Image 1 (cartoon, rainbow, N blue to C red):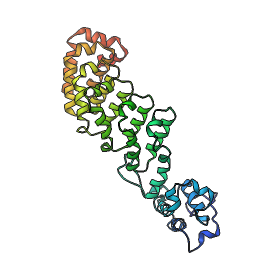
Image 2 (cartoon, one colour; image 1 turned 120 degrees about the horizontal axis):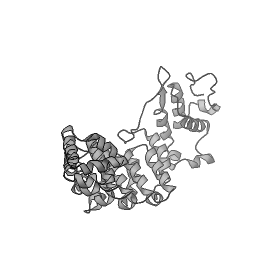
Image 3 (cartoon, rainbow, N blue to C red; image 1 turned 90 degrees about the vertical axis):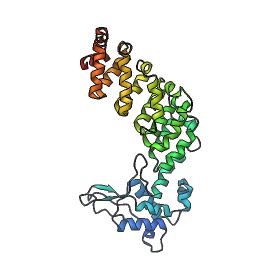
Image 4 (tube, helix red, strand yellow; image 1 turned 60 degrees about the horizontal axis):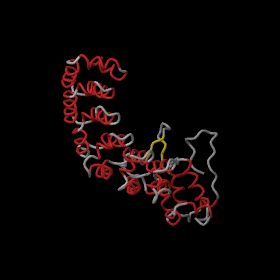
Length: 330
């Protein structure tokens, strides 16, 4: 059976058939034997699969039809899995011999990619259609999140090309875009930025949309400043109106929190020049509070002076729930 030295006495290993010990075994059997000899402890799903294949005479059993074709014809893929599973450290803690970054910066073994691909294969060819469905969007998100490598995520996201604007305004599709942004490498997200900036006014339109503002928000956080510079420029051009907009203010707060120093400076100057109109807005009160929290110390002073210069602004802030904190900061 599999090595169980690190397991409690009550744990019973899976029993193998006598064929598992045959010297003339398949690549899958060799993988299982090698995993036992090297004292690897496999996750239960993988251990069960390898054990069953180890006990089988081949891949001719009817249940094997549920495996992907690559696994049926190339069982040696499972051999790589035995070398890419968790091992037990001396202190009994589980460590991984191979890892896959959540942003795809490293890759796992071919076998692990193949097993993760089984989830993705169920949505391939219908990603956009499923993304518009209340239940289907969850399947697509699961496929993107469980993908073992960046190539798989790109293959799934490829089907969203030319549909970005529709997806970001869709109550279900916007969640799929958010999942892509939060799991894929920045360079893989360029198609979203390109579709968002290919026509003037689309960035502002998205920032004012109840779902689109989330996409812009996540792009500003996930991508390096040079990659989203055109998005930031479009937002800064109309910052005074966005500051008083329910969804637009949400995007501007993100710029104040994670933007470059230059972007923060330009935004603070805009708030200072339009302190009266922004301060009189319930939504704008949040922007003033965010600027007083995240701007450079000198810039905070300029905003505080602009607000305090007009007592009516300070009074308006103090009367609202959102503006009360901003008034205290002033």
